[in-house]
Length: 367
Ligand SMILES: Cc1cc2nc3c(=O)[nH]c(=O)nc-3n(C[C@H](O)[C@H](O)[C@H](O)COP(=O)(O)OP(=O)(O)OC[C@H]3O[C@@H](n4cnc5c(N)ncnc54)[C@H](O)[C@@H]3O)c2cc1C
Image (cartoon, rainbow, N blue to C red):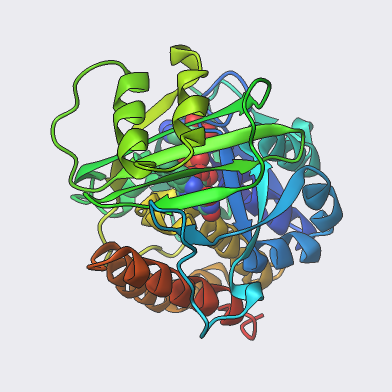
């Protein structure tokens, strides 16, 4: 059994590891010239850590991460309590994206990853699928997994008419910087008015990850730093100003800005021999900080359902039957967070989402 995985992001690499552990030969195609990770810090929740444990790399992932807790404060610095949820519903591991991708690439085996080779299209036959590649080559396999992100070319062919869409007015700014010169005594996530959220979290290696988000932002003006600073000032009105200080100390070129993109709910995720995973299937709003975590579940489920003697169409159908309802529930819980009328409600709905995600893993019984 041989699988072609398109995309060497978190989900493609984790899929590569999961399929190889299931006894399948895997090649991962990545159009970039190197393993890279756009972004800064990444929160990995318990359900994804359980996958990494199953794949035998949990300890390595924990060794590059810092255990953290997702508690929110209001602009006045008051903790927004969620007494109905336990501490385990707030716990996650903060990792540096680039370090995680490097670790995953090593676990896939660099010899199984073809860099600088983009996917163009596939041709599906009854007993195999052929990927056509940017270098003019073809690759024939038993199945093809599209883990090629929000702008997925695999999705464009498998589910035509479902391009990534802007989440109107939803923007995110973030960076990882050394803490030198700024007194960062602890982690702080603030929910403010005007759809703004932001804060900072210390990383494993003594740096700090700061982030600022806004729903329904007015049109952007000024530099990325000014955009993030304006929002931080509002979030910290009357507070200690640490977030603004961190942003002010960040070189403009280190600040990553995203217009948030979403993939609309898809009518199907698979054909007989092709499946989508990760953002290719479900790029979602980052206000629930769980897109990668949920994509790691996709990879694990593919690994559990597939094996050297698997009936590929049946396994992919079972994958889709598990994933589509799970993501419908994610969408409901995520919308409840997004449309919360107050910061207190946002905190409560957020904890409800993470409680559901970490306590109700899907697909566990489907192997
Ligand atoms: C601001 C922000 C904060 C977030 N924070 C969190 C968080 O804290 N926790 C969390 O769980 N999630 C978070 N997310 C979501 C998370 O970033 C994504 O869900 C995750 O990175 C998706 O991984 P992926 O591997 O599916 O896609 P990607 O990371 O997009 O990887 C896709 C890969 O495919 C490659 N590719 C694309 N097209 C082709 C092609 N034609 N041929 C070959 N290769 C191709 C790309 O180069 C890339 O390497 C956040 C998102 C944002 C925007």
